[in-house]
Image (cartoon, rainbow, N blue to C red; front, side, top):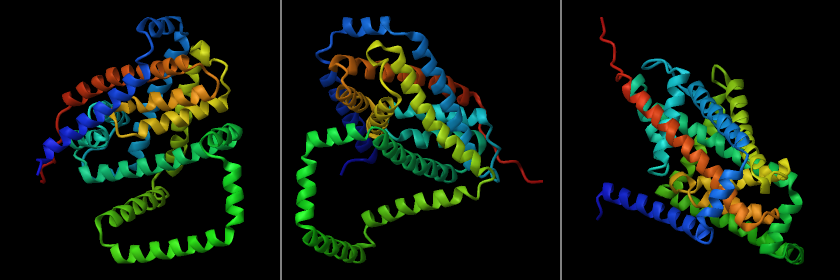
Length: 334
């Protein structure tokens, strides 16, 4: 049996290898000179503006995080410290997928003395809310770009034929659904002590408990408002970059929202920094919007590349800054 550390290294190498392969497959036919030419001719006012917006979004994430923290233990976390911890987390995600959540908590445990478990609990709440907002953003994009959604679905399956088949076999489908629900209930009762079922239950409880617990915060409206603003900032970042590149400058806000949704889904994939998956999904949806394949891939490379450089620079600065802060020591009792 493999040692846990060796197993983790294998997982990191596999995810990195997958990311590099997807990226290579997408860009193997694009010459570096063409990509560089597009970079040079882009409007860097808009691209630079997108980076400023992103930095504000990172700070807002840190501010929102402090609203979830229980300041009854350790030293109070300042907005500056929470921002730097968030950036350290983003930096860690570039090395090991999902490691950033533990890394940013570990940073504040060291400098402020707040327990790692308490901080991880706040991160679970954050991620649960972000998941709900992602689902809501997908539904919003569906409502705004409904014809395109239907067109994409029709390319994959014949929706009209499926709907007609459902109507023709409606009684059978209802009966099968009832049997499936009953079967699922019996399976759940039989295996509810299994690890997988308990993990699913725990995940759903975390989401419910997180949403319910927000109402007990000292500033619940601040939490919800900042959550909305974070997703607006994601959109504005994408929109600013689209304005800076000639091939995407004419995209409508609804189309940019759709591109943002696909990019967000790509970033969820368990690979370092969404490398490859982000590029593939963003390029795919841009091609469906009528953008040339090469231009769609270059757009994805520019927005991801600039954000990657921003995270590397800001993340390293934050990492050095937090390393220089002294470790928290529990005050001696009188």
